[in-house]
Length: 82
Ligand code: SF4
Figure 1 (tube, rainbow, N blue to C red):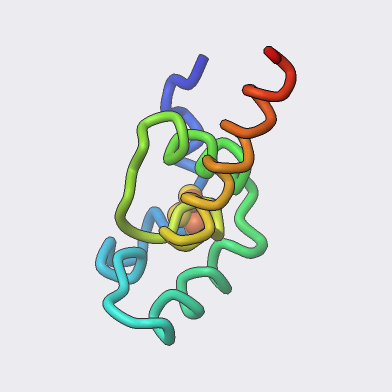
Figure 2 (figure 1 turned 135 degrees about the vertical axis):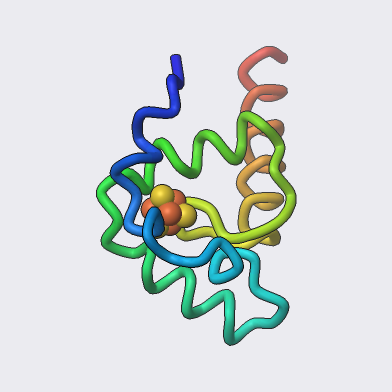
């Protein structure tokens, strides 16, 4: 279960939140680079996926990348059920 404890260890904790809600591709790259060696990248990404957070960069992924991951997971679930 996710108790949010990972949030205290995120590299972004002392950075302005706006860094992770960029308005263009350059901003997304900046955020992704910060996430790249964040120790809690995994839980951060799972949190965003589980809570269907559309906006911002989480766990080093952009909004579009997370949509792709969700689609892939849905496909895999359907396949394993069928
Ligand atoms: S992966 Fe990125 S957004 Fe998530 S906690 Fe780390 S620095 Fe913050």
